[in-house]
Length: 223
Image (tube, rainbow, N blue to C red; front, side, top):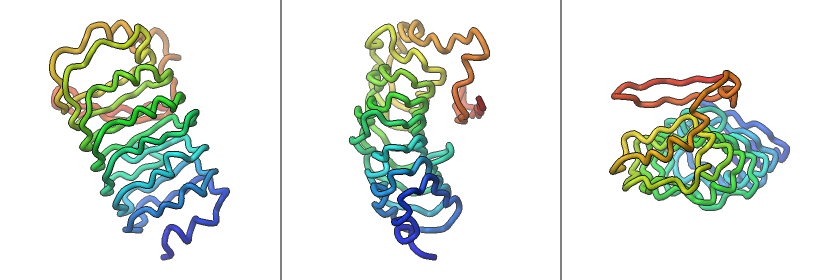
């Protein structure tokens, strides 16, 4: 079959690219910068390898960025490596970013705070080495934060303000190297976890898995 570049390089109005289980087995070409209308990419089990191009993180209309087990830009079962790009579009429309189950290294880029609409961030099963990202508490819509099975370490300090992570509903810090206790002040911040009506659960269609006392619990929610 033709390579990915020749298939899509002239499709400047392309909004959705789906190549799930299509064996393309080569590095991803750096062609995404020209696909400014792209909103979603699905590349599950496609044999991709190498470093993911930074241009995809700067697409102005992209709403779902998923390189793990969720949908829309999913690269589950591939062999991606390197660091998460430091350049994120200010005012991005991204609502979901999942980079799970790859070999990504380094730290979480602080430029993610520019994604003010972000609701889900899933970085599970990588090789990230960092401290707890308390600075993410300023993201006004963040509801799910999955840092499971990485090299996060050190003590988790007090929240930066009484409004930190105020919309957070799911937090998974398991299988890391954190030390000490979780500051009790966070429980005063996490008001969204105190469900007082069914309306509080209708945030979006999402699914994830959380490890609780050695058992995997799968969550699926459809708003």
